[in-house]
Amino acid sequence: MPVRGRKHSATPLYTPEQRMRRDASSWTLVQGILAPLQFLVFLVSLALVLRYLATGAGYDAANLSIILKTLVLYTIMVTGALWERDVFGVYLFAPAFFWEDAVSFVVIALHTAYLAAIVTGWLTPAEQMLIALAAYATYLVNAAQFLLKLRAARLQAAQLPTPPAPGALDDRLELAS
Image 1 (cartoon, rainbow, N blue to C red):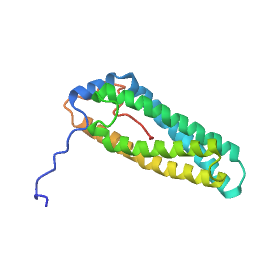
Image 2 (tube, rainbow, N blue to C red):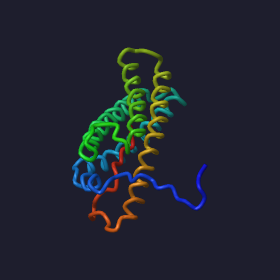
Image 3 (spheres, rainbow, N blue to C red):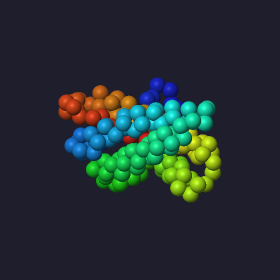
C-alpha cells in the first residue's frame, strides 16, 4: 500500500555516464533514422496487406512489403544491439530495456515465421498475411514501449541541471522490434 504524500523515486533510465555514451554513440543517430523509416515501411505494408485481405488483389506487393519490413526490422535489431552495447555494455537485455528487448524477440519471431511460411509454402497466402498482421500488432506494442522510453528519457533530461548537448538524441528510437 503506497504511503500518502510520498513520491515514488523512479530509477533513472540512464546514469550520467550512460547518457554521455548514448549521446556519443553513432548508433544513436542510426536508430533515430531507422525507427521512423521502419514505421513508414510498416504503414505502407499494413495498407497493402489489408488491401490484399479485403480484395484478394496485390499479393505480390503485400508480400514484398512484408519482406522489406522484416529486413528493416532485422537491421534495427542488430544496430539496436550495438547501441545497447555502446550505452549499457551489453548487447541485449540491459535492465533499462529488458521488456522492450523481450517483446522485440516476439516481433522478430513472428516476422521470421512469416518468412518461413512463404519460403516453405506453409499456409495459404491469406493465412500468411494473418501471421504478418500478428507480427504488426506486436510491433505496435513494441513501438509504444520505445516511445514511452523516449518520453521517459526526455522527462529525465528535463530534470537534469544541465541540458544535453544540442542535437543529441534523447533515446534510441527503435520502433520495432
